[in-house]
Image (cartoon, rainbow, N blue to C red; front, side, top):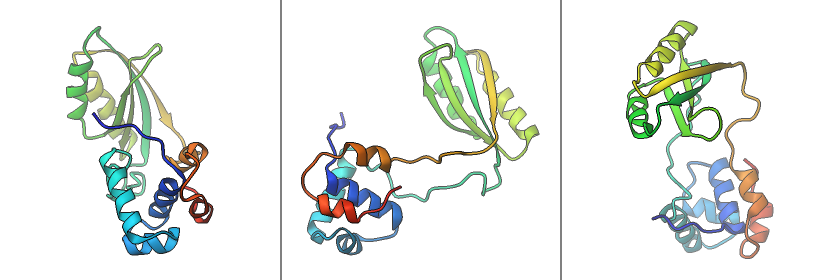
Length: 172
C-alpha cells in the first residue's frame, strides 16, 4: 500500500516549480527552489515512491486535439456490478475518466468526442454495458476552472523545511 504523507512547504515548492517548468531537471529545480540538487533529487524520489507524483507525461488539452465536445455522464448500475462496469468502461476510447460516487448515481464519467454525433456514439457505447441500468448526461459548455492541485497543496502544506522556497514558488 502507498504510504500517505503530509507535504511540507519544500515539497509544494518543488511541485509548483515542476508545474511551471515541466522539463526542468534537478539542477534547474535546485536553482528555482534554492535548495541543494541532492535534496531536490531525494524529495522527488520520495514524492514518486509515495505516489504523490504519478508521472511526467505531457498534459493534453483534448479540445485542442480536436475533441471539443465534452460531457459528464452519471451511470446507475446494477447492484454489485462495479467491476463489470469498470471493465466495460475501460474499452471505450472516448471515456476520459470515471469515478465511483455516492448519491443517486453510481459512476460519474467524463467523456469527449469530435462532434455531437460522435458524442452520441460514446453515450450509446456507455449504455451497451449490461451493468448500466440508466444514464444521465450533461454537455459541458466551457471550462471555468481547469484541473489544478497546487492551491489545495499550498493550503495544507506542513510547516517546516522550505518555507522560503515556497514563497518563491508559483501557483498552479
